[in-house]
Length: 225
Image (cartoon, rainbow, N blue to C red; front, side, top):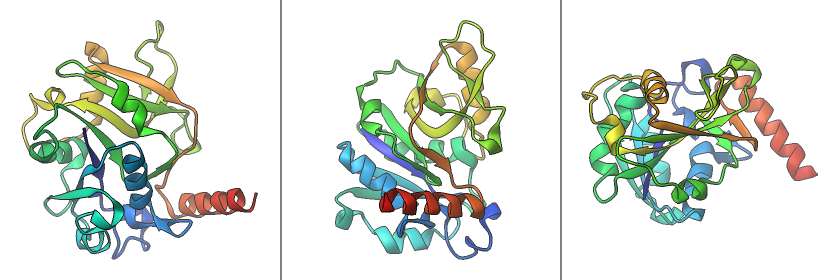
């Protein structure tokens, strides 16, 4: 199984920190966010990784190169200036992701989490299906994104963690270009081809400078403790 880490976003809300830096290269406890994802994937036995690039992508290439120094194999998928949105980026990378396998993991590069991605390796999807990891709603997204697929009465929505498992067929009907992922996932939930799980462990969306400060402060406390 291969994995894709999404790293092409502009990160405007993180300015000026991202003026010359991709958001996934921002550091938590001295390490880039990308480094945590790569290490977690490697620990799960997933060493073939695709990273999409747009804003300041050369910074990522300079740091990680082909991945051998980190015990993995990294391929880079370049996008146009401004990126292709999440689904567009995944569709653009499908030739890299599905050379041998029909299923692949996707992780947002700008999150910080202790989710064990090896759990996703145990799942088997049918053609055209996807599986999402949801988390409890943080203060900046109190209304949530999606309901749990197995809920009889869909009233409570949870936040999409940015972690998912996809069968390549989930994107078969989508043309290349700028494509948002949210509408595809909502349609998939309605059609019954998207499953979900709720993760209650550590997860943070590093979407603003204050959230980056908060997660670094939390990590400092954890290490002191």
